[in-house]
Amino acid sequence: MMNPSRRSMLKMMALASAGGLVAGRAGAVFAAPAARFASHRPPPGKRKFASAAVEQEIARVKALIGDPELAWLFENCYPNTLDTTVQLGTLHGKPDTFVVTGDIDAMWLRDSSAQVWPYVPLAVKDAGLRRLFQGLIRRQALCISIDPYANAFLPDPRGKTTLDWAQHDLTDMKPGVAERKWEIDSLCWPVRMAHGYWKATGDRTPFDDDWRAAMRTVLATFREQQRKHGPGPYHFQRSSPVPTDTVPLGGYGNPARPVGLIHSMFRPSDDACIYPLFVPGNAFAVVSLRQLAEMSRALHGDRAFADDCEALAGEVETALGKYALLRDEAGHDAWAYEVDGYGNQLFMDDANVPSLSSLAYLGFCRQDDARYRRTRALAWSARNPYFFRGTAAEGIGGPHEGLRMIWPMSIMMRAFTSDDAGEIRQCLHWLKTTHAGTGFMHEAFDQDDPAHFTRAWFAWANSLFGELVVHLADHRPELLQRA
Image (cartoon, rainbow, N blue to C red; front, side):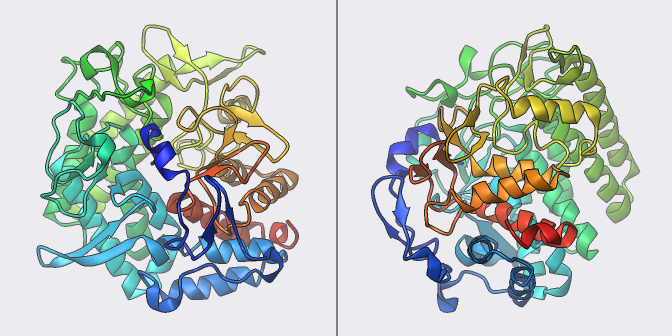
């Protein structure tokens, strides 16, 4: 994810790596006449990874899309992670996969998992994809073993961070770490990806002793950050004019009662939490711990570890129900965004996943769950200070890019969690009309001016858009006939 301290640096990003467009003024990129809809993918010889299964999927889905511009966007975005961000190799004699976020030469545990998620269903019929996933699962296990509190890592496990904004952080920096912001979801996303890959393929290859050790570290870190016996070892401070880039009280965060929830110093936006009991992250942990328990029993017959995972999942879920609920104007309960266990609550939502809007997408609850529907409606309303409505679109942003800036990912998540045909079509229309002629999704754009955007090359947003279109092709193909 992009840190606030780098905004000015990344406002003007050439798109040669993302597909060959020509950069214009800061935050704006202009393409050739849109009517031509020429592919903006790199030429085949310059793509980082090739998959026959992915190419077949592109052809299948494009044939179902009635709108030429939407089909063009899908063809550009869906394979963008494979085309531009994947680095394959070997490490310790085994497959190794490193996945950069796009415009940053580092691997976020969250982003790398989400970037490859749309290809999970195709791995069963593509040996190359299976090797890619095997390498990424192993690399993520290595990263967790290096430092479970870090969010981003370097290609060289022995290297010193090359990220200029992280050079002088006051924390226990480790070799191989690019940035050390503790976020619950950094440990959840690799579990989600590994579980999805295993369920899709039945492949047991990457789940070796190193992976098992990393998963034990995941559980231990979650328990440590329940802070029942003190704050634990993690602390983080950064000298920055941006308050959301650092953590108060000596780097240990604002106070919170040890009520069974897991403390998180940062959100998935890489912005600091106000109250350390981050509700979407805890909900995601409940799902991930139960997935980990399922894998532990099936792959390794380790009932004791599985029981421990399920016990923590149940404890966190119970604590959420007791401490993480608020009341809407009608007196009905809904989920808060952050709490402190003392009765203080923050309501907002952020575009980054996990979010309140994404709880159903992540499997924490059913899409038709009444409490979730109320929470989702509040997030997409004036109750959320980071909900923006303009002439170009409406959507959710967050403090990371500031006021007025809508994240396309929030619009995608709204479509993912909707059963309403009109709502989904509206989301597709907003996504189709706010890419500023680039043919790719961006991090954020101004509510009234899509040509003012951040991050021309942001692979997670491209992957999520591709995943959404495939999801609609499989479940609501009629909505792709005219968007």
